[in-house]
Length: 223
Image (cartoon, rainbow, N blue to C red; front, side):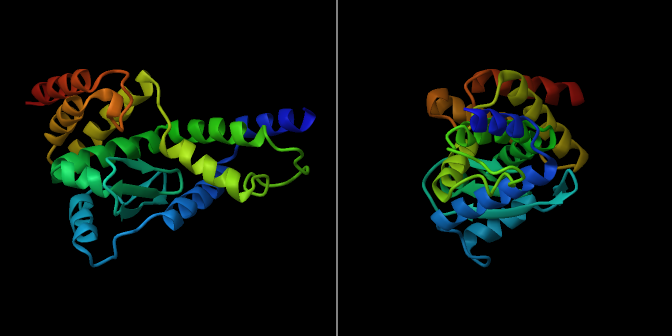
């Protein structure tokens, strides 16, 4: 119990270096479990085209983009700059929509949401440790199976309504600053709404239809 308490405290005070270390290991774990599009594949070339003109870093960390060759509709980003887009999402959405989703995911990193999620996920894993030696790094305290579980928690994390809305606005501002097409911010949510928020990669709070409405209002205000 003392060890679990110490691990929970460690989770609440994860340093940026801890977050990057855990993100590196989590991303590597997921990459090892996935089929990744080769650099010269149509999928990778398309993604490179989509992100051209977008910022190359987030919080000073270089962004690393890859495509997972899967039918799943998903995308995520981690604090180490790891950005992964799933084949199902790229099939469902056009370039502007994929770009909007990526901007949203980068927003979660830039605004510190992924760090908070990392802290929560790490605490849940670390609490099951029988003991953790004092001074161990966050990664050293986790077994391989726990690291895999942590990675899955990060990918499937649900953000709060406030966090989702903030990431939406971040994506809007990012695309505006980069002078890139912002219409995908509306149509991507419309497509998610048609799929049903219960099956959406996005949190259902607020619903995708409401998020699309908010983006339409911001676009109208900019005209």
